[in-house]
Image (cartoon, helix red, strand yellow):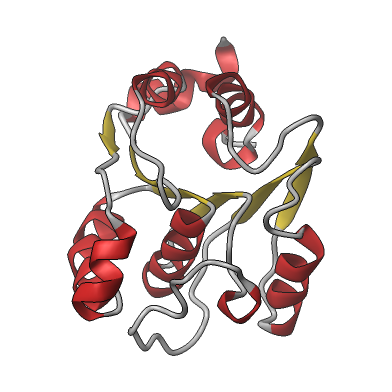
Length: 182
């Protein structure tokens, strides 16, 4: 696959953040390796614990270093919110899958992380929305991005619900313009 060649040579690094109740999976790691990422930072996060500890302040502080080392930050659902904050601080390229950005309009118990970031320092921003995601309405997330003047490109993944299957994740990795250098 010629379009992946520049990244295989570069040995890029990606930081990945799963959603609430999720975890790193070997299938997703394999998809990212296939796309040419040499270093994949993909740790398990217990968001409920981190929220109870200090409203995710120490989680965010720990992950800033990982985000700074990464070339790309990717997050799914609540991990999309964490990835958004990290990209906002570091200016890295950002990929989100069914992100849970508008914390005021969520059914999840975890609200805004206890962090203060001034300004928007994003690189490129891509969002993949599940066509059948009923948990987090994409119009709410798009409204949040509009209100915060965030420029982004988005796609709707046909048939995808809120959770992303390994097959859907691999498709997203294959079609991402950030990952593939388009």
